[in-house]
Length: 552
Image (cartoon, rainbow, N blue to C red):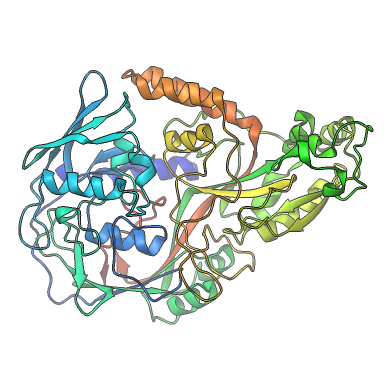
């Protein structure tokens, strides 16, 4: 079998995941007191708040949370749940009671972390007053009935069978801390908070995986991607997160720096038909307010499967990846998460057929209309992509009008909308589609540079630099009852084969709802003398983990 970019990631990623499983790790290594501190730079606006492992809307917050507080499980490169702070997680035959056994792990205060601490952490996350990132994932947990069986054993009780529950215990924002106190976290992570300020973490010499290589970890943030690039190449930082393709191309072959690129880090969609078609007329599409056939509102065109299929067939995905991603990504196959567990890899990709697409546009009565092409407010890459897609749509008889998205709370405009979804377990992505909610918040922070790079980022601050908190649901999915039925079947069965089949079928059902134009990479720049860092999909076991990072 040819070693493709994806098969390479599977091979190297699997090794990284196994290396992260504690049973295979070397514990108790002596701390090196001579190693220099490590300085890392993320997208975002400052100043940084104290690290709270239950508030992790931005990559910098997720990285700091992973540094100070271990989660019970972690996600492997393929987005499976694998052991971490928990030695084992096992269900009863009904899938409603899960027994969690903790490994021996000393917290930053020198005492072992306990099952009572784990339960208190889950209760804080689920408390609406906390506003925790992962709170929606714990909605099915009965935290009153759940209990600490012993200092090292926890029983988690669910309201209904859920054999996919381990994915929740590996999600970002579920770190375990002493007494559940995330505001002043005492965790078991490889680093601990520094009293000098929230931007600095100190090595935890008693970490159960062995002491980190670097004695000190310093976090900086800058929303401007060019500033991050310059800070890296000038040697002011050792690690720069979220670099754009043009910066990656400038680094390649350059001495003193190198790039870690993780394929399959973000799926980029074109959603056709966003908006309330029954309340909008042709004027919303650039016309005179009447439908082409003299009938109902022209907004209903976007409910016409012929128009959705025309866009699918009319988009040149390879040209988009070449011109926008600079070949640092793969063409989309109209399904979420290639390379992840439960992705139906046997579904053939769509081949461009502009002639057939033009025929479908004409059959739908849409030839010559102007279609709004709505940017993704959290993905600067949608702007250069809009220019390329506009050229391609014109070839099939549609005229694109690139424009800003609708304000939060406004009635969505019918048209074609960009949406970027970061890598996450496919069952959690399907859950969002089934419920009609936004995806589980991704590891994205935004930046104000819209110059056309592969940002893979969500905006995290307003014009005044104040944090905005969780990304708003600009364009929630339309609820899918058919997907919900398959997801419910997958959740309730203990049979891995039946579960996998249901999840793959649900994925295929979603294929008609949107067009995927790319499966993009995430790029991190590091100094040439920084060892111990690996390319990794967001939120997986080795993503933004600095416990093995060492300069020189």
